[in-house]
Each structure stands twice: as C-alpha cells, then as structure tokens.
Amino acid sequence: MRLNKLLLLLFTVALVAAGLTSFIYVHRVVQDALTVDAHVEIGDYVGFNLDTDKLYFGTVFPGGSAERAIQISHHLKEPSLVTIRIDGPIATWIEPEYYSFFLYNQTKDIMFRIYPPRDAAFGNHTSTIRFFFKAI
Image 1 (cartoon, helix red, strand yellow):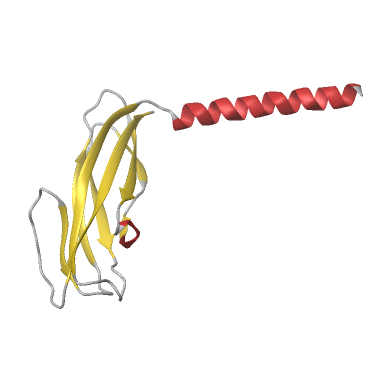
Image 2 (cartoon, helix red, strand yellow):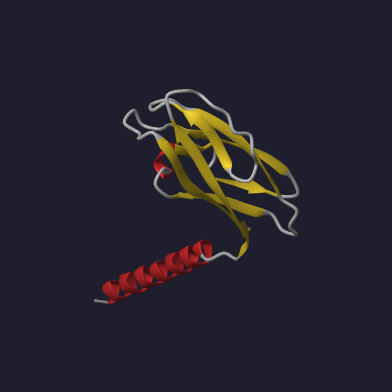
C-alpha cells in the first residue's frame, strides 16, 4: 500500500515536470515573425522570375523542380530559434533546407526547393511561408 502511494507520487511529479517543460518549450516568447508568399507557375516551358516581393520559383514543368535561396538576418538582443512553417495548397511541394535553426547576430542563406507532382495543373500556384523567431 505504501509502495503504491510512493509510485503514484513519483508518477505525478514526473507528469507535472514533463508538462511544465513542454509548456515552457512550446510557449517561448516569439520575438518576431515574418511571412513570405511563395509562388510557382506550372507550364510547358522553363521560366525565371527574379522579383523579390515573393519567393518566386519561376515556371516549372509538372514533375520538375526548382530552387531559390533567401537570406535571413538576425539583429535581435537574444539568440533565436527560427522555425519555418509552410501553409497553403502547395505546401507539400516546398522543402526548406532547414525547418528550424539557430540565429544570433548573423545572416543565413536558406535554400527552398519545390517539387510539383507530375499531375500538377498548369497555372499559378501559391502558398505562405512563415518564419517564427523565438527567444532561447
């Protein structure tokens, strides 16, 4: 009986500690957030778009691929964990070089690659890429 109470107490303490650790990790203070629209045109030719108002992959064949690099600069007072989240209709087509990484007073190049499926419809397709800077 006494052993059962001790095990229950230890289990409860472990559960509370794990819950608090998880809560603190997930709810760190977001220092900054950046949103970039991603765009690709699916067509029967290859084309380039070097504009900088969006992350343009240009024109790509269905089943083809393209890549584009962007620079992320960090000039905040504290180091940051940068997390990338991609949302939208073509989110599964886009692969960043890293989904999360650390930055502190530096500029980092991040490569994004797009792999439209062979059955991708011709036309313009977009998604949203979000960068979250969390204090560490």
